[in-house]
Structure formats: C-alpha cells, structure tokens
Length: 146
Length: 141
Image (cartoon, rainbow over all chains, first blue to last red):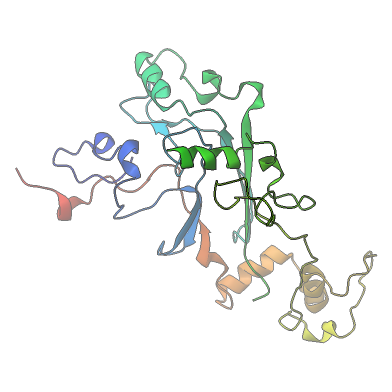
C-alpha cells in the first residue's frame, strides 16, 4: 500500500495505483529496479512504454488487499537475478508484454473470485502468448575504480 | 495526433527502414541523407550507437600501485591484456589474507574507507512504508 493520510484510515483506497503517477510521494518511493542512496534522497528507477498502453510502465502493478482474492499481490513478472552483499553488482529482469496491459481485467477477475479459487495471474491473461514480450535486463554496478 | 502516430511507427518498426535504427552497420535512415526532400515527418528517431571499445580502466587508483608498471602474471592467467584485473591486484596485494573481493569490499565499508553500502536497491514493488503518519496527518473527528 502507499501512503495514507485519509481521515478514515483506509490505506488501500486512499492512494491507488491510478493516482500514483499524479501525486507526489511524501515518504517512500517506488519504481522498477529502483536504486537509491542509504537515505533515499536520490533515487533512480526505470520506466518503459510499449506503445500500446495509455500510461507508462513506471511501477509494478498489483491488486490491493480489497481487490485480491488472497489479499494484495503484485501482478507482474520480474526477477531479482543476482546481487552481491555490498550491492556492487545487481541484476534484475523485467518481462514487459508488448500488447496492451490488462489492468482492468486483472482487477475485475480477481475481485470476482473467492478465496477458495486460485488467483488470476498475469500469465493467465494470455498476454505472453507467442512470446510477445521484452526481456528487460537491468544491471547495476558500482564503479570500483574511483 | 498524427505526429504521435508517426513517432510510434518510427519507434516500433512499422515502417520499412525504421527497423534499422540503432544497429551499428546500417546508416541512420533519413537523418544524414541531405538529399531526401520527400519526407516531411521531422528528424529521424534513429540512434547511431558507436562500436564498443575496450574499457579504459584507470591504473593509478589500484590497491597495489606498484603493479601497474609491469603487469604481473599470476598463475593460470593467459590473457595478454595490458592491465591486471581488480581481483588479481587484490590477490597480489593481500596474499594469504585474500578472502574474496566482496569480503574486501565489506571490510572496506565497515572501516568506512569506501562507502559501498551507500547505494543499493530499495523495495520498489509497492510502497512498503508505514501506512499512516500517525500524529502529523491524522484529522480529528
């Protein structure tokens, strides 16, 4: 969940994904493969666009605690592939579908399922059929020759 | 909206020559072609990426500065590069106290010689912060 300064304490609905691109964060940060300094004063993250979506892919998308039939869950496909203890090298993989991202379908289908049924994941939407996606490998390393 | 469509076409290779953007061998489609007078779509969106050169590591900041003059060959290396790798130099410098380059970095960070842990990942999937800022933002009533 994101920041909540609602009067009623409904953290899930106060700052939804649809508003995340338009509102300033006050304490915390998101992004894809984000890195920052230890005080999170300067943050770097990746953003992508497949040319089909109405919004950029700037943050991972998921269903909230209210929407998910098993609670909140990120509905994306990504992997942390490698890292060192000092984070001098890190590798991250994000699989970005080329077709339009099914934001509404993921929410509505998960809301329709009850808790006994399995979750409706991104793979179930068929968006990765025929392998029409990009493998975005993000590698970060420290400059040790400073 | 037509210009946005043009940009989309150029970026996603729906045109015939837009697919060559970014390759090293092909010349950029229209940007350098001064005789192309038929196109009125504006500057080309292709990027000319120069061929990758060998990395140019500075040699004067290595842990063992004396090794830069005559590159030593530790047993097993057959490369003919003009410089030793960081790992090799560290191995030469520490000798029996060598525990791995990452262990060396961790010790450097603990001794505050170099702040390796200053930069790193943060949990960016979903904003995992405390949901409420308790006393500052809560509204009464």
